[in-house]
Length: 405
Image (cartoon, rainbow, N blue to C red; front, side, top):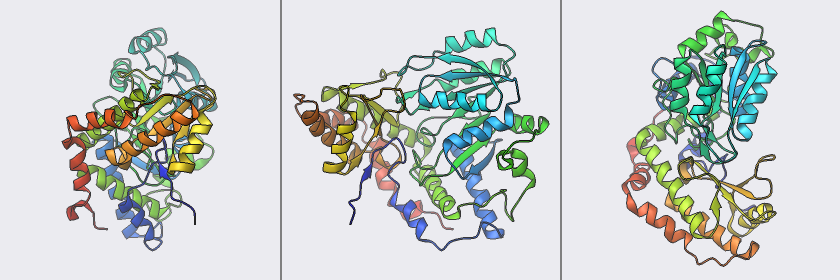
């Protein structure tokens, strides 16, 4: 029998047990009135996590990258000028989507491991007043940095540009206010901070963005990528394609868990877990890629000696049953670990054992003289405000916590 691995990955993340229980249900058809009610209610509840009152939410049954393609396909026409904010692997992915649909890209770049500077964005906008939209990753999963979405949203609003945000690794774990921050299209994901299972990408559109797509209705290939299909082509339900119904029920459970905990409390829990993990990393003698002011709350990128990345990951899995991520593409190749602390794992019960295992592994692989201080350093952070994570653990066992379907 295979051993069970603990997923401290930047995605997929360790799922909540309550969510996994949803997968034991009978298979549900993706049509009829009962299913339509479940789907519509789930979309309405997702709006609370996107923090939008007027936005429209669809659940795209595929990866975050394909969700970005859906957005690009519906708002970008041949020759449209698009400002893309790029400082890592997923910023490159967004740029690729823009080019695929004929967009003329203006890149605003920052060094890998550094956040985008809003002043650089202002300069780019000043020189490209005719740009139609800006694309940006909120939490750049390849480096563990958070980009300043609020400031970018203000710049986009001031200049009448649409703002598209990839929030795949921050949705449900980091502060993100779609309406207040002037976001027009926002892409979330199920199996990262929400702690559900993969292949579901909730997408929220502002009314302005949806209407623009309607006004500029173009033939999108494949047709299922078109928002027109989501309006006119229905298979007995409010979506134009077969839905993985059990995955959606699992997502709905994840949304209930997040809302029951309270979004502000959830953001605090992720914030303190991220800080605790970074302090633990530094205490064992390693460095974190981003500065503390640039660091995101759901993923930490850890710098290790060149050429040790794969060996450390392998030993963590073999000896401790802990899986962590490595570098992506050219970014930090051979010297970067990416550790997720999101959803269920943004708590001491996962952060502390991972730090302990990492320190033992680094000591052996890198021949470093560590002093077993990583766990203590992280504990000091958790001890400063215990209510920010203890209440979340206790709330999960409340009978009122679980929804009825």
